[in-house]
Length: 466
View (cartoon, helix red, strand yellow):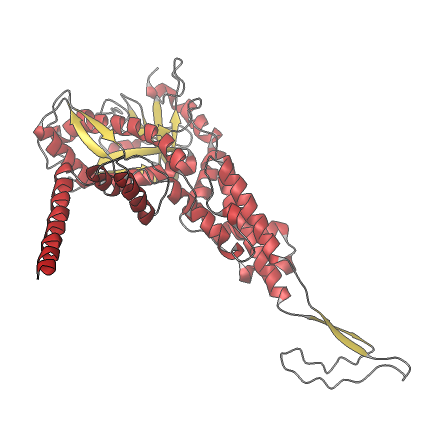
């Protein structure tokens, strides 16, 4: 079935997935820094208007979402090594040119962050108006895959990308979507109608996709679903932790001030201020004993912090992440425990799982660029680079080993002991400490180390002889 004949089905598909798109928008909005809005919404639902009026001045908008996503998204730090297979030196130079102009590792790292936040992402190569290649990762509130593939329904046959707002021919404004199949391309509104004014602007009246394949790389964490289920737990916890910390601020505010109570006291002249002098009279008739006292609210803040830490630890474990330091906390370390748990959590196993997804994604991406988009851009004079890739050339991507987080000083001590025991070599140790060094750079560093040691030995000899 031609893409034009699917547009009404695609329109229904978009409407069906609006709740998911909204969920992903809110997650992305918090990730970009707008946490306070969602924190206020949560607290308004839980507190009386009077209590909310007090707590809103002591909100704790601590964005653990960004911290956790950053810790999970490290497979491009350091960046992978990309090699040309079945090609030549010109192919390698052209690949390097694209890596530089794409800022490939930086953009793929953003895609990796979206992958960990939404469980999928979409990567798009494109050309700027001045003929420079660029790439971008699209957040998951801006696109939807669609499939009518009966053999493999997890394989997209259509990609839908939000295009913002546009004016129709009749002057009305509408939300538009760019819709791609391997052969066709249309711009439609929310009702599935082709927006002819936009197609005319692109001078693509027939809806032809000149790339002859969907011009995106889709990275999907789910092996069973075309569109993964929303990751509701990460959104919930990203709001819950600052809610609980705001509660602590609320408790501490009232714990800092005592409540004054009186019995048979004329309190009209009482001044509610620190260091105030109170000159009070009894309302009694001489038989009643006037009294005044205070109540100091007390809350076990350390216990409340441990509750937060425990919930965070359970949640991290549920995602296959070992939280650092949480089990070692005591009363003195509770204050920094949450931050320390995130800083020292071990994500190596989780990151190793991600590597396979992104090896496959990069293979697809570079095939798209090398054999579909680059020839098209050259043919249409859209790019300054005129050389072409070899027909059979492809890119092999090798990621660095995803090792557990260790301080550099700890790694040095471990490698030193292995060298002393004869379990490894100095060359391997240097490569482990400096994974981005080439073989030539490692050899040069070894030579410099040997040279410095040699000079030191000569000086020692001269000093001993003297």
